[in-house]
Amino acid sequence: MTNTISILGSTGSIGRQTLDVAEQMGLRVAALTANSSVERMEAQCRRFRPRLAVMTDESAAKDLAVRLADTDIKVLGGFNALEEAATAPEAGTVVTAVVGMVGLKPTLAAIREKKRIALANKETLVCAGELVMDAADTYGAEIVPVDSEHSAIFQCVQGCAGRREIRRLILTCSGGPFYGMTRAEAGKMTKADALKHPNWKMGPKITVDCATLMNKGLEVIEAMRLYRLPLEQVSVVIHRQSIVHSLVEYRDGAVLAQLGTPDMRLPIRYAMTYPHRGESPEESLDLLSCPPLTFAAPDRETFPCLRLAEAAAAAGGTACAILNAANEEAVGLFLAGQIGFYDIPRLVEKARASVSVTQAPDLEEILAADREARRAVLGK
Ligand code: NDP
Ligand code: MG
Image 1: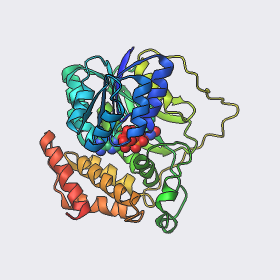
Image 2: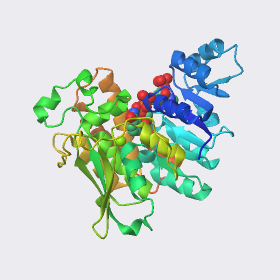
Image 3: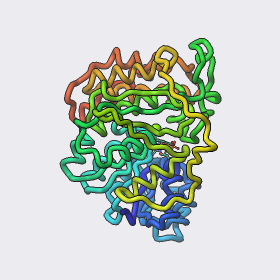
């Protein structure tokens, strides 16, 4: 059981919900980080009194230092300071809730300090999952997933004797706001349409990923890395109600699932309390009033990002880092209103075609692939 945590990305959707859970559980907070949301960070610092606050944006860090001058909270700026937050000695658990592969180096730093990693930042596992999982094994650091599907699977494999017992993992997928549309209809959808997720309130990048189904593709790779299973043993099923959070099918045919209301505070809390369970003040699932549970196959033609992610997973090596970096840049362009919905898979495909894949890459090769893929998308 964790008493003290650090949160990388505390001002975001997962970060704020983690602070709700921390407050409810009476956890102490050692370090908080954000990019540029100074006002929100100041409020969090005054409420939770961390020893360290980091803003990766240097001018935001200067602003925060002025605002917190009446406190004894240490304020640091820049990317390298994320590692200082990730390794704060008081914290037993580091919640990785930044968005994007910027989370990779601080996650590795926390692993080397044997912290428990409450992992929300899926891009880290997508681009360097094998390195991260190997490092966790080497240093004896626990990785407890926060992503709702992977938390569900984590809960369903407690008591599983080994991964040979597993026939397949079944990730559920809401289908996103454009579910059921034709390509022509989805192609007209704008940023505002994409940001309306039917069941979850999340940060903008993951919300767009949910609309393209890239999120589910990234999650397929995340599941392969966390459970060291091949692509053939990870499948996806559309489940519009987001009540069954994912399932594990065992070799004897038993299928175990975790159900609950769509509320990220459950997986966040479990990452803190594992292997125990904490008391939750949130509303629990009422089976008699919940809608009928439905399941369907995903449409990989209208939503090619899922197919692209699966192809990168099959290619291995740096292919997933290339896919992820290209997607981060393409989603950034879509959110800036500069490209259309289907330009996202087009640009990802372009980066995959133009950047060569290195097998069994080290960290430097992964970072180089990431940079090249970004250049391929931005045309720089
Ligand atoms: P948000 O966009 O809401 O929050 C992102 C956080 O990261 C903010 O604190 C932000 O700071 C910080 N940040 C953004 N860019 C940088 C950067 N370049 N360097 C350092 N810090 C940065 O994202 P979410 O909370 O939605 O998602 C966080 C992660 O969790 C993602 O990887 C996502 O895929 C994953 N996840 C999220 C779920 C959800 O329900 N939201 C569900 C499952 C997984 P600032 O506020 O200053 O910009
Ligand atoms: Mg998820």
